[in-house]
Image 1: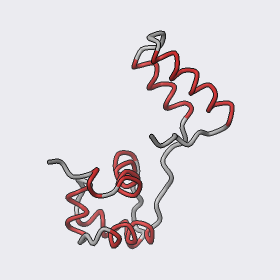
Image 2: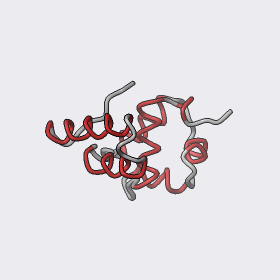
Image 3: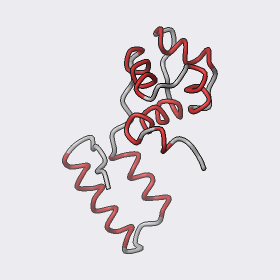
Image 4: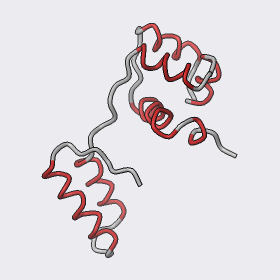
Length: 108
């Protein structure tokens, strides 16, 4: 299992303690999510070049990448020329595609 990137060593220790307490049943799932949000670094931004490179790595057309990320073709085009920048769920999906690969994005 890949370890989460933490904001600091102190927050890493807090997060590990919370995970242990969650496993033992002292912290519920909802509270654990709050610890996740507080302690784990947010997803890094992707530049236009990084997005284009990611798409080319998996040999996807812009329209196929738009389908995989559940967004529009024009959004992908704007990301790749730098007119717009992904955020929120789109940024998280790009991160998953980058870290886990195309297989993680496609349902059976």
